[in-house]
Structures are given as C-alpha cells and as structure tokens.
Length: 218
Image (tube, rainbow, N blue to C red; front, side, top):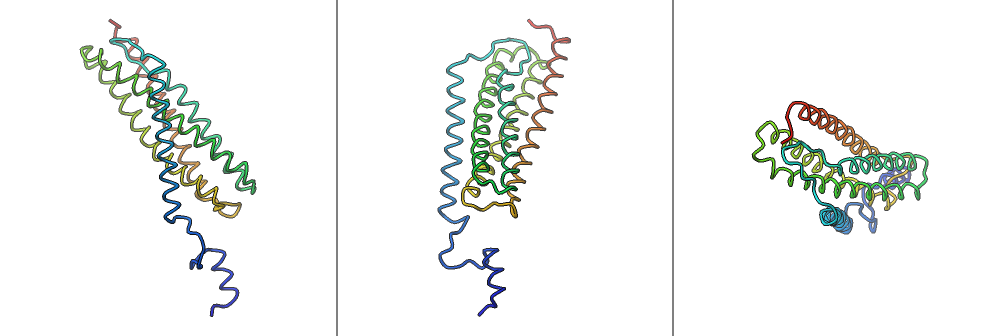
C-alpha cells in the first residue's frame, strides 16, 4: 500500500489514473473535439459562401488588388488575440466564468477570420482571370498574394483546432492559477499569427504601391 503522502501527490497529479476517473483525452473528449472543430470549419465555410453570394468580387483587370475583406479579417484576428489575452489573465486569477467566456469569443472571432479570409482569397482568384494576359509583372505579385494568404489561413486552421482543444479542456476544469500552460501556448500561437499577418499586409501594401507607380493600368 502506498504511503498517504504519496497517494496525495498521485491524486493531485492524476497519475496513476484511479478507477472511474474521467480521462481528459479519452474517446468522448476526442469526439467532442472532432464535432466542435467540424462545426467551426462548417460555420467558416458557410460564412464565406454567404459573402460570395452577397458581394461581387472586384473587377480590376490588369491591376493588383488587396481585397477589402482582408481588413475585416485583420480586425477579427486582432479581437481573437485580445480575447485570448483576457482569458489568460482570467484563468491566472481563478475567474473561471469570464475565462470560459473569453475562450468562446476567441473561437467566434477565429472562425469569422477564416470565413472572411476565404472570401478574400475567392476575390483574388476571380481577379486572376482577367489578369492572365496582363503579363508576368502583374500576375506574379497577385499569385504571391494568393499563396501567402492561403498559407497563413492554413496555419490559422491549425490554431483554431488548438483553440478548440484548449476550450474543451477549459470547460472540463483543467486550467487554474497553478496550471495554464496550454492557454499560454495557444495565446502566443495566435499572437504570432497576428504579427505575421500584419507583416504580410505590409508587404502587400508595398507591392501595391510599387505596381501602381510602375505598371500602368489598362
């Protein structure tokens, strides 16, 4: 039989698992994570589809474009980072209800970012069609915008799955003022994505200004 102090340490760490103790990453948790991420991706896809029905893509043949949708997606990414920072502060002060609420807001803003970003990529793809005969000087930068934005959006999808995992763990009382490592990693993941996106937008602005001054619009 284990000494009492040894049992206390094991019970506090959750290892070895006791009979009947719920497993945080068991089968039910995996199913919940799957359905949550699938629902978020479906919501983002539905938002992107709705935007394509409501707004026509810009038709600027022979011109380099940065879709206006990128401005809105940038705002959503910023709000997501803010909510995750708030969540990190709440959990460190043992304010569980605001902590969970901030996680839900983070999920909402992250999903909105993916949907609006997908709509922006759709606008770029439509603008590529009239640009096919505009020369490599125009098609190259436009394709670069599409590739960089798509790659960043894929990273955001991964970050959204990580946030879904952290959110489910948060609603299962896995984080408190003593342990919030997962929340911290997730928060900084989104912060880094936000910084990278601002850098990409800056490059877009420089390229757009360069082409506007060097490449005449037909």
